[in-house]
Length: 119
Image 1 (tube, one colour):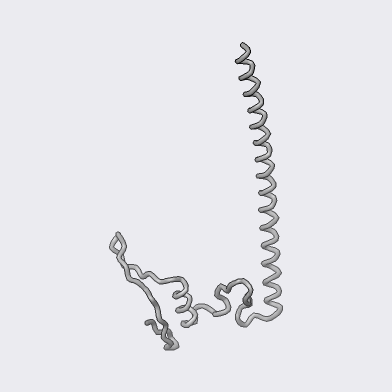
Image 2 (tube, rainbow, N blue to C red):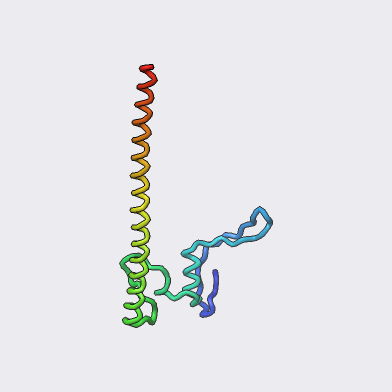
């Protein structure tokens, strides 16, 4: 059990292990670590990752701040999408050009093979 500064108790299933180098490490799950952080006040409950569909608003964030943050994130994601889309199109063109080169090479090989059979 771990006691936070507010003296709340948190159940933790941690493991103490020895590494090959002789150091002692504590193994704890991410969920347990976040629980400790929330209870100790290191992590704001609303700032922690929330599954899709739940509130993405930070604690104490005004409507305007929330709106501005979402607009910035939408703009950032839009730019990333444009970059990835452009790269994807470029790669598709490269693949198409390689496929054409392979077809031409196969045609040449067939022609050369036929010429060798005749000779």
